[in-house]
Length: 311
Image (cartoon, rainbow, N blue to C red):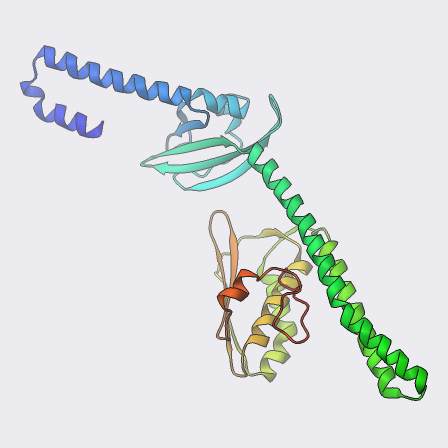
């Protein structure tokens, strides 16, 4: 369309009335086709000017939002001239979840609206099925894991029965009981995770607390830790205690994967949608087989690991 107008403007002095009418009809037909296309779309489209005023919208936008776009979008504070994405829930004429994307286009902003209710429902069902499978895997893993300590305890009891003064057998049995208790506690934690107590705060706070807790181990192992935090880091909704546990597990893994004198680099970043935390160490790394099974329970290369930390 842009090239068409350039061509007409360039040759307009040589176009007679007939040619102008013909070119006008081509433009009118093109605009009519575009209008039909916008009206036929299931997704909503809204054009906003630099001040956020609506220049154009299609019928799907009003149908999805359940109200005139001018009213429905007024309180959303959409970022003008920036790319963004968010989800909202509408209750009229029925409860639905919508995804709103803003797309900068010159001085204008396009708002793209689509119904993701079915996608959310499918995702919830997939999560439920995945959770059921995870519990089954965990139960099978526990059944396998408790076998060794139970056998060791049984053997220790037999030795004590023969010789009640056999302190080594008693100590072995007590150690295996402690191991058994740890396996069961890890299992219960995995299948009954505590619901997050979400509060607004900085993701940097639990990270710094975790680093302070591990500082003696870093110093003992001569591990150099660098922390890169941007000056302006937005708050997020988080459970500080649970995030500290996440950071502890990751840093403990890094410590155990490195020789003395290693390095850990931690970097925090943010954009319009997310705050991210990345960890990099110079440990031995993981091969393709380990990565493929990274979050599966009871898969570990550690002598005393349970394989539940990352899961």
